[in-house]
Length: 111
Image (cartoon, rainbow, N blue to C red):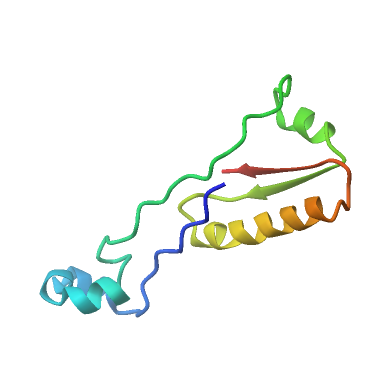
């Protein structure tokens, strides 16, 4: 899977007002560093590479019933909290798999 993108945020509560006042163009060095969201300078977000569902799995219940443990990450690609949690869930999944805590573990995103 690709690394989760860094959240695109404003670092100052005044960013939205400043951007409307034209500061993104008048003061681009500061604004692009501190007000990335309000200035529309967020990097493109790649969707995570998702595995195809297993052959024969036609719905969520079927997928879940095929494994001893299914870790499901619910989120939205536009949500900064979902993006921040993605690498955490991936690390937990890798730890469970590598330490063989369970013989069959699956991980899925539901966006």
